[in-house]
Image (cartoon, rainbow, N blue to C red; front, top):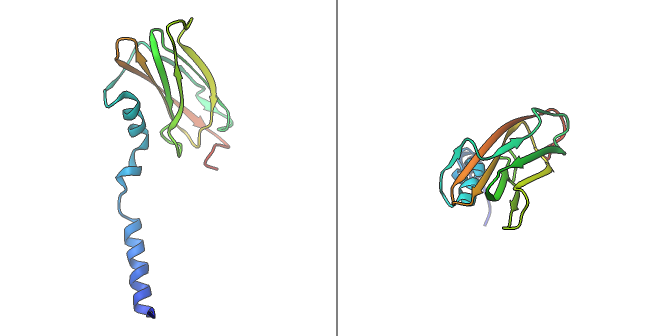
Length: 140
């Protein structure tokens, strides 16, 4: 089969048109990751979980955060602006002295960091903190 100039042009125009279509699977990966963690349940904003993160991170490769959620069985941290929004999940057993965790995360750009805690009664509580990344990050 030989490809004519007209066929090549039609193929190229089809590729351009396809690239402009919205991709719902990639549109809100952060919300999908949170929904997967909560099983589709709503995570209320409010008391019960405290997220501590710097307001400005000079290096996006190592952003220190800490999460405290007394009475939680699990805490998940999400960065919706990253290529992979799931950052970390911490599980606490019955003998855990406190339900607190701290780590360093990588942020690709300025974005909200979200911590969602699954409480012992099965409810979900979340906290959000905006971190401004000045240089570095996992996105370049």
